[in-house]
Image 1 (cartoon, helix red, strand yellow):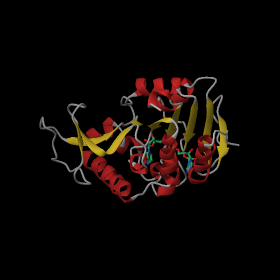
Image 2 (image 1 turned 45 degrees about the vertical axis):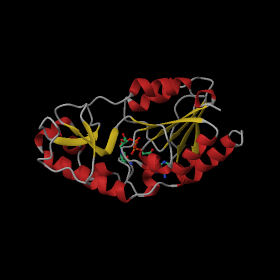
Image 3 (image 1 turned 135 degrees about the vertical axis):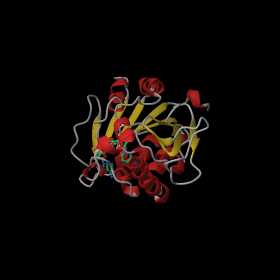
Length: 235
Ligand code: NAD
């Protein structure tokens, strides 16, 4: 069956899906913001004030991503492609969905394994070394920065992501506090008739029309995937 004829599933993931791969979330108790200030390391003003601190912060994160492995949730999501047209919309900057085998992934907050020009945002480069250093320059001679969306910057590929939410018949949102906008607002573009779930280990309030499936991603996501592949609704 062609991809276009298959039923569409949107997976909307956040930092929590990669927590069991050893990558820390930003807002959990041991989240990174307890050690660093957002303004210092994830804003254009922080970059202007201290680019070497910002580069060091992301170089550390990049090393952690390179050492991490996809978990059962990432792998299960890729398995859905046996039967469905699956679009992964992720707020994550890691590449664990790619390495887990998913083929269509929209990174609305960028990708840590890429660098981009601080002069021209269209100049994006895959990184051949784990670190970006001061003095590493783009083709136009300006300093390279991480290809990551900072607070106050334009989120990427939102029109495309909205379109996928609006045309999906099933949506699985997993591992996100839904507190970083505008990305969190994507859940509101889903069809009323779509089957919609939020996977969280907490008693997190799901968005209107979504049902909470409480538990960790590696336990709940494979269960949902099995149900959908067998044509059942997850209970
Ligand atoms: P968040 O830190 O705000 O929220 C994480 C959510 O995941 C929480 O609701 C938490 O309860 C849940 N969670 C924790 N462990 C879980 C598990 N095992 N299974 C399922 N859920 C679990 O993350 P966010 O909503 O994605 O927003 C923060 C921003 O930080 C994002 O924009 C993202 O770009 C960035 N970030 C990315 C990474 C990454 O790429 N791996 C890591 C940290 C932060």
